[in-house]
Image (cartoon, rainbow, N blue to C red):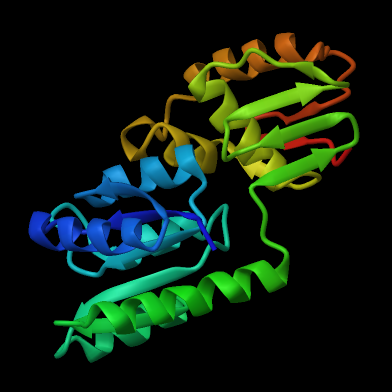
Length: 226
């Protein structure tokens, strides 16, 4: 069961150890050393699962968990120190699926991760979305409309994927900006409007009479469900 796994851990030796173990299992691995980097990579790469340390230098792991839970239900496996019982409970309440305690064995971590990936597969989690004639492949960062490839920049693709993951539902400006550009850009609504305009052009959409992207003025955007 090959999958992309995101490691969010500030200790480089642990990241290296995890990368070696995961790649030996055939997984693709991305790494982040801070909460900010972790949120950005989660939005960009749509990983199948995240391994998340509760203690990060710029924010606690629970804030990362709450951030990703705004747009994805991907499995999150926590790394925690043995004495951090309150932190583990809070993180599980916030949406983490499981945890291992440092120091941990490779076998235990991989077994728990396999269980989470199996559960996700059964639930139908996918990195491929079809909305009528619009098809989006997160693994290859490709999208097509009526069989024609859309030539999207990385940010345009990330924006489309985020909207498509919530098709038919309102996604707030704040959520989009934080997920794709990070918390520092949470107020840059004009910046977002530029990318929405570019994405509309590539989808052949008309803001005055939209087929795909609908605007809720001052609040956010909604992508048609197909």
